[in-house]
Amino acid sequence: MSLNESIFSVVNEVRKAVTGKDDCIYKAFAAILAGGHILIEDVPGVGKTTLAMAFSNALSLENRRMQFTPDVMPADILGFNMYQKETGKFVYYQGAIMCNLFLADEINRTSPKTQSALLEVMEEGKVTVEGTSHNVPNPFIVIATQNPKGSAGTQLLPESQLDRFMICMSMGYPDLRDEVEILKGKSAASAISQVHPVMNMGQLVQMKAQVEDVYVSDQIFSYIAKLSQTTREHSYIDLGLSPRGSIACARMAKAWAFVHGRDYVLPEDVAEIFLDVAKHRIVLNTKARVAHVSEAAVLEEILSQVNQPASYMQKAEYRV
Image 1 (cartoon, one colour):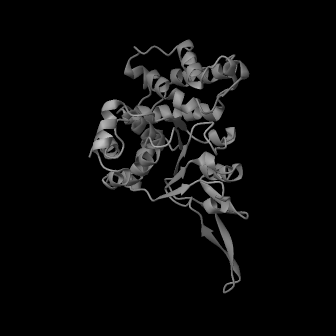
Image 2 (cartoon, one colour):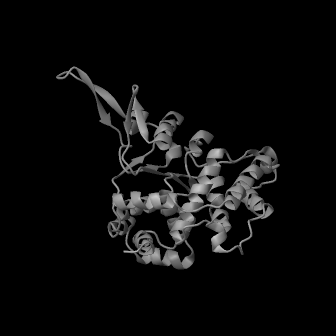
Image 3 (cartoon, helix red, strand yellow):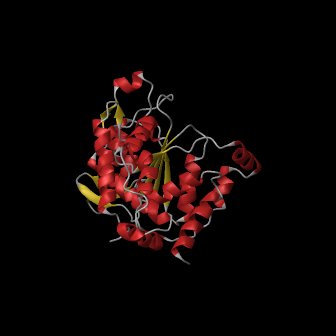
């Protein structure tokens, strides 16, 4: 099976469970290939959990799902040590995080202490319990869902936690035709069961390595840096894109080019993923809130202000 066929086969399987959201499917797959974690923010019932479970099935990943509620404790996620009388030693018992794909459902409904328990494992791929570190399986992906800000019973994720997610995307309501197809189709649980494995973990790890080799020219790196710098200087933004955000933008652009069949990044790749990478990382100031300006609107303005490298450049100039 060719590379393009492998990518299409994964997307096609996920489509069996998620109708009319091809852009979300491709972006989620690109984030997985870039080695990042995904935050899906939207109203209940639009298919956030279904998307995560469909990818788990299609990629043959061991998955665990946790419904985050106020009574979930850090030990439920990370695991704990328990004394064994027979051996006279403490033994580590794994938490829910020890899997390939961890689905954190409604992450903003749990306490800040539990939310912060994910920080180390998302960044470093290991869990530390009472001074002893335990590596999580490879590959390891966190897909978290959250309800919009202001929903009843929610607690905002801190900036340090949000920065660990490579992208934050919204699935949105389906259009009329797609909603009719959803109504005519099967239940979400039944639809997920129709998603079959088309890639194993070894193939996924190999594909992630190929994404690392996607070529990024100096012009593209400069374009990403200028976008990040502009977010830090914008009159509506208090907290701009961090260097970690710039790195995430470059990695995501490489994966976006890869899922579209190229081994080099174009300026258009950066522009198409910039909002998903940046909107959860910036903090608007009071001036923006008074003017009722959204993060997306500010980032769209920044994209229009910063000149792209010439898109008519020949392919060879991007792959010197």
